[in-house]
Length: 361
Image 1: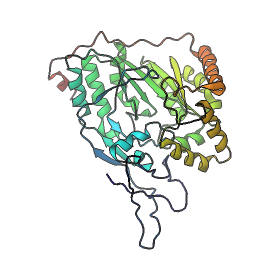
Image 2: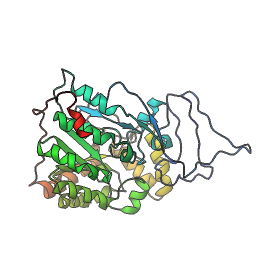
Image 3: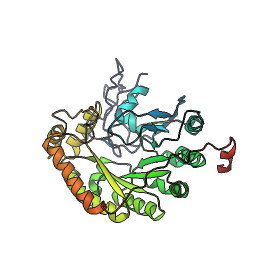
């Protein structure tokens, strides 16, 4: 696929987006740039809407072979994410579809409308035993397109019918729409929800995660889900040196007060094309501390922020990583020591007779 490499001519970021440019796709030998007849680069429109493109995968559940992650299976009804987080580790996945990991990742969302049907097919396979599945492992299942596509809700309906355990992670308050289904799943220990809690500094949030729910809204989500007896964890991710790193103790405290039963964290890593996207964002919004952030990020990963080594990439290594780990452990013990996260149950898995899912329609 040939894509257009379009960039602002004034070297300014695109309003409401995390990326400010298209970064070259590593799998493409050539890229093309659209020019005005006057010979000037075309300026990115700040009002250009997000495109939805339907794709037709043949499978939807993916095996995850990584000691860094607490699950063995994942599924993603969407590829690309309109939330536009500049640090998103999933940006390189867009290149496999022929798009850029820059603005394309935020503006071109690939929609797998057959995901619910594929999910049901997978659950009916004779070898499937009901192991927990992460929804989603790469992009947010409650990003804005879910409001109308409703793929995540349909997947929850199927999971409830099959008694299939799920783990969800999101940073969007849209999840509250599905509290009815999540409550029924939680009653049978079939669901855990992780709410990504990055910062309570709204100025930073607007720049870092431009199309996401605010920090206070995410705390409210934790509270509302907890009141419905849905087990919730806070995911402090990523911890970015000199940006949200000082907030870690307060994020854990507020998450616990809101009802979270536990918390986890990862540190920033700049894998592949994420590095130029994040660096450009950082130098524009925080030029005074850009070098410090980048230097400390490299220090977390043995001198190379592009860390892909399993067992190390999520938490980092070295003295600085150890300091973050110890701080997190101390604060987690302070605020969560009396709390327990229920273990998901796979023993209830039982495919219903075909046609029973019609009851959800």
